[in-house]
Image 1: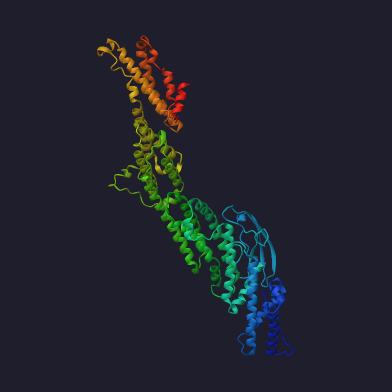
Image 2: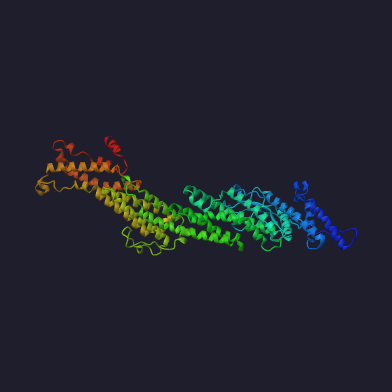
Length: 632
């Protein structure tokens, strides 16, 4: 049982004599452990010896009876109490410091463990009930198990004298761990009760808060949480900040669910039986308020930092982590004295949501206004197209979060000629705001690409550019089930029609002149087929065809269709028109050329060779590579 008052009887046997005799004995015990007067007292600690603990605490209790008794004995009592409180403060600090090692982040995980019920008697002795239970818990890498404790590898659930049940307790996400061995917790509680009773509440709180805060700071350092001001965070480059955000998300879960929760539980067990109102609350806030503010200041700095598109997904990660943590924050910081922590967390969450909405709006404007005017070589996919489609594919992966955050539909300025005209009523009626924003981004991307296509001097290449980019957009949508579901089949069909239309326009612009050479008009004398063929006109026609085809082949071999399937489909489509027309033309007029002089100067390519050369197109060959291929 806890050390209690002892009454020492003197030889005289009177009640008063008994009191004085008890006081004298107690005073001697106090003075013997006065560190200012004894080298031995400075070198040894009382709480390393259970018998000395009982003797000393009983002495303190005995002296306490005389602090208001009047006369000389009161003066002696007050002097002894001052000595005793200084000593107990040192003992209190020593116990705390002895068990202030930081939580080891490498062992922060859940694992199956055996729990033993350990009953603690009032005097601090213990007995094992022998009730052991193995409990397999779901593994969760962000939660943890204490390592480095003086306790054994099994986690002991200890019932304290306060009647609050198990020392290590947990909810589905909070994991409270044993920061200090139960015997030491009991000793701290004994000391705290006497310091508070003697009027040393402030000193008790200061010592406790100072040592435990230092332990929390050490855990923070081990978890990689740096002491950065809001200004420090905002001055970091984005690459460094991304790494810190990832580390912060993991560390924040550990801090709230384990470090802070365990500190709160420790405060309750040390101070709840002390008797002073809300002392455990004061000690808890003394310990964790500074670290908690430090922890949440990082997220606050991100929430109010300059907005830019690359920050959206890390801000959403922060938002998701914080919204997941919010119930735990409210549970751990449920005291009135910790209102400010709960308010700060809720305000940060609100600012992160607003930042995400603002970034999405600014991203739309950035896509619309992207100013590059240099055409991409070969009409291939523009970097802006790749960036935007990869970006909105990622947005679709954050759909559950963004559906809750994006509440309003996109808006356009109908009087602004630099804004595309788009009727959202043409889409399915069930499209939510987020889906409409994604469609709007694609609309303004295409609007920007249409403008960029005008920088090509070759009309056919301009259409090829639109075809490549529209096809890439369609493929990215089809490749993401989440994005496809939000975009919808109706708008997807519209996009598919867009790239097919561009492919048709390309073929017309690129091949109409070549095909025009293979017509019959202008080759017959006297205006009729039966009247004969003009050999000179026919020769000119073959020369024109050869020159045009060679130029088309030379130029378009350098153009690029990066998607292999689209590239083959386009070649087949060209050959379906060109090959039969050329074969028919040769069939009708070959004999007229071959019967004359130097037919090789006019019929320079067979149907098979033509087909082979068409198959060389859109590979992005340089002019040198083209010449090398032609010579082979």
